[in-house]
Image (cartoon, rainbow, N blue to C red):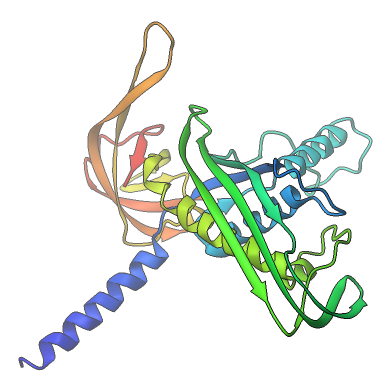
Length: 299
């Protein structure tokens, strides 16, 4: 029996970990354009490349609802405005206004130092933007990351990240060409590896800021003992999770109108039974007759 206890504890730990992976509550996030303050200029925009790869890395992390970059959202809104003129074919696929997901977190920053190459050595041949040859090369990029709460506009955290990559011998290096949107090719270069190293550090840092922003949802319908909330698998909600439900009171500065704090008067509790992409259905286990549409839901 004693020998079974460690095994049971291990299985319990694995099950808890698996549940946690399914129930990591997510926040919507958008990456703004990174400004190049490094005094480096070339045929590709280092700030745009950094922002594009950061957006992709945040998406791949699975911890956020990643929204399109600012210019992409601007294009989407322009398309909505165009469709609203009546000059496009109607139908279910026509873009409509009022459906865009708002960003809870904004990420912006500056490239403060960029060094494409410090290398030298034995020649080589150039093919399609790559240089192959026996040489040494070192690339470095420094950036400052800012995480902004979109509700208050305040910077909740900032950090300097650094990426350094070196290559030697017969390896694929970097040549100064207009990379455009060829992120796959860019990542294979020495500079691309340095950028990815800095971005890996940035993603870890940004993920650590999640606890600074309150996660909440709202009750959209109550039917019998079933409570429908406006958060689903997209936000990381999973069956079995518990949420408290109640009225939220916001305390504001009477002079400036700034939000100072908020508190919840708890009236009930629900356990999630089923989850769809954007909604979840839970059962009221406490306060069944007191939970109403519009109430706040919090972990």
